[in-house]
Image (cartoon, rainbow, N blue to C red; front, side, top):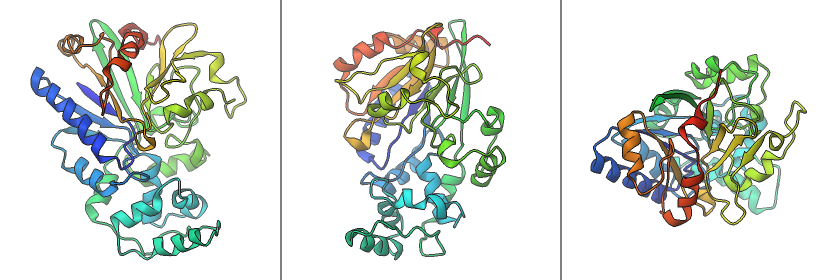
Length: 341
């Protein structure tokens, strides 16, 4: 089983609750399990350091993707020139960078200076790159360095083959997918963006445009865009001035329950294009996961777990099974994940 988990943002209790639930199920049914995390482990939430420690210590097969918040942290930590341009975004109150600095290095003087500016009502934030003021345990730097920038998995369930692309946000089509998948370092990622003239807010860590066609025949699973904001972004006209995604896709957005896994299906083919897993844990929503079976046996197990079988099983840190039963029933069939080349 591949369990994919959305944006955590320092919310330790929902993370522990969700992992505990998945582990209890694993022990009951005896299948193998791998966790794939979509990024944004830090910032905004109350327990950044504790979340990192928990994830590092988690005794399981696990894959971590980089989020834009980890990228901003590493820009700052390594004194990258780009931080001079976008660092104000990380230090802004709503992004939580200052709290992360304080949590990971309580002796750093930088956050005191910036807090003084905030308290004085000064909006010209101090966002110079780090020159030794901020230091954190090398284990965290190692943790960030081993993260990936995208992951593609191929599944074959009950004779149906399909591929799923995992990314923190929506990959920019200017960068060839294989180059993004093979990207293995912070420096290489920013080199790719520079090579293909992709601005930071258009990269696979920031891009919020919704797809009208699949990427390389894959269904895309991502985080980054809180699902309660998905309705706003899906209606926007893309940067290439083509029609907004709403002209090509249907979605399951529910005004009464905006903190739910958001997905789109192509109007003509009925295929699933995109699944957004950022259900807003740090905004009072919940932390969500979806589980992909990797064998026919695992698909059969999911069918017995008190929910209608789709190729994925939606789970929550807090439960709410009655509310989510309809989503399970409506979600997708295995066939809807299969995109013709």
